[in-house]
Length: 259
Image (cartoon, rainbow, N blue to C red; front, side, top):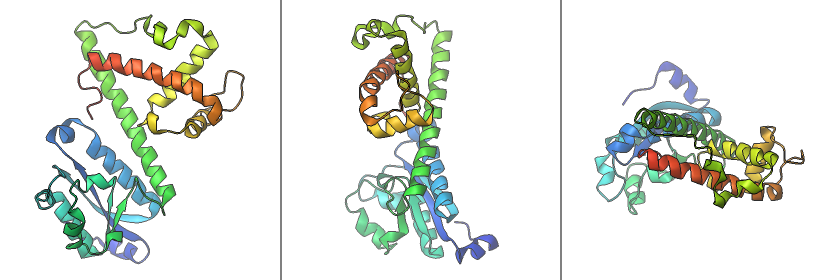
């Protein structure tokens, strides 16, 4: 565990101190996935926006299940000791990164009595702006990483003889593309492209999708601004398009989505 620098000591009187903690469950996630890095990016962004001095970052590649997992995670133990030593808060991306054990609350209170010393980026309520910035930064990283890995896997498959770019891919019956006008089809593809770069497009509300489109200057087929009601039907078609694409990529690239 590192000690505070002079700069960090001087900052203590003006800014809150924190340590970051991230966890993935398996070696495969830690080695081949993006979760640890994505959590780090979110936590660092949150700390910066919320006015924290981030003293150190700790991580574990270990299960969060069961009573013994608390003591088996050296990264978590170090993070707790650091938080107690420097009267700092612990910032995590999500509560389940701390634990999946029902008795965890008692375990952690024995070390860190003040539960307010643990801050969850995803569930933040009093620091909404910082939390939102961190979520967006993580979403951007996740989307970029998925895109990069998908392209790498597709390149490998092409080298093995796989054929992509089937001109009939967007004309299958479930999508009913043949019944759409060229303008409508292009618009659906634009919406799909915006959704494709979101970490979890399914969880977005229609209002949030409308704002994303408006912010990017994408207009409706009648050149109007998007509203929640206007975006409902084309968003559903765009999601079907993405589902079809993902199904094809998943079939050809075994690692796709395993992050």
